[in-house]
Length: 159
Image (cartoon, rainbow, N blue to C red):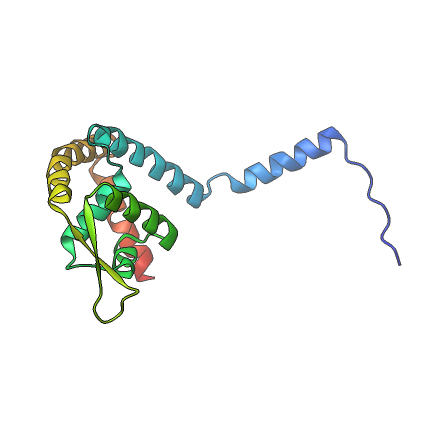
């Protein structure tokens, strides 16, 4: 049996449904966290602008400095970054001469990453800029929120 045609909605009905949908998403944690991430990232990116570096790239330089010749999987796990974004940022760092790629002797498809001298220099130059951004964000958020934010990813990963 064919379904009966639906009655055209009035503009008022459509607006009411739109308001209902909007209210359903009010307070969405994913949206709030994404927005906070973009705002915090913009503070770091602004501070790092003078050395032509973004916060995401600084994070990768720091991860490469921290780990012993990490591969892409190691970096992805440490930074919780998807493969496409990670590859794009690694390529940019490589193109700028801040990192080198080393072929793995056991698996030639796998590459490991190390800082170049230019990468170490950039990381040293970035440190006071990063510290200034950290202090700015910490001042705005306050100690309790900073502590909660530092613990947030650990709580989510542990679940």
